[in-house]
Length: 138
Ligand code: TR5
Image 1 (cartoon, helix red, strand yellow):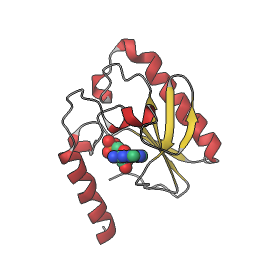
Image 2 (cartoon, rainbow, N blue to C red; image 1 turned 180 degrees about the vertical axis):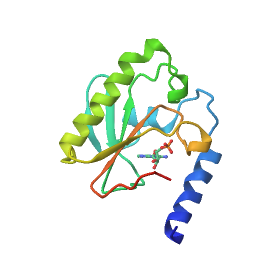
Image 3 (cartoon, rainbow, N blue to C red; image 1 turned 90 degrees about the vertical axis):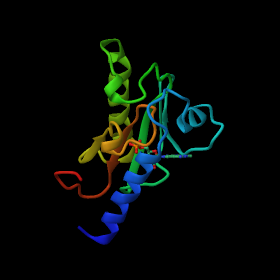
C-alpha cells in the first residue's frame, strides 16, 4: 500500500470516528438539499438529489441521496417500507453514470457504519468512475 492511500485510509477513518453517531440529527446533506450550502448538482428530481463529492476519490465521484430521509440515516436502518426510496436511489445512480459517460464501468458504494468509514448519517450512494477500479476494495 502506498503512503498516499494509507493516509487517505487514515483520513477516512478519522472522519468516520469523528462523525456524529447515528443520532438521526440533521446533517450537512439537509443543508445541501435545502440549497443553504452550495453543491454541484448532477441530477435532481422530486425525490433524489445527486451532487459532486467535495473530496473526490475518482474522476467521477457523485453522491446520490434521498431528499426525504425517512429514518434512513444508513442502509442498516432500512425496512421493507423503504423499498421505493432504495429503488429510486439505485435508478438515479444509473442515470448519473449515463450522464457522466461512465456506463461501461462504474461502481456504486454505500458505507454503512463507522467501521465502513461512514461519516455522514443521511443514506447516500457513492457513484465512482472514470478510472480503472480495483477489486477487492479497501
Ligand atoms: O464517508 P461517507 O460514506 O459517509 O460519505 C460522505 C461523503 O460526503 C464523503 O465522501 C465526503 O467527501 C462527502 N462530503 C462531505 C461534505 C460534503 C461532501 N460532498 C459534497 N459537499 C460537501 N459539503 C459542502 N460539506 C461536507 N461536510
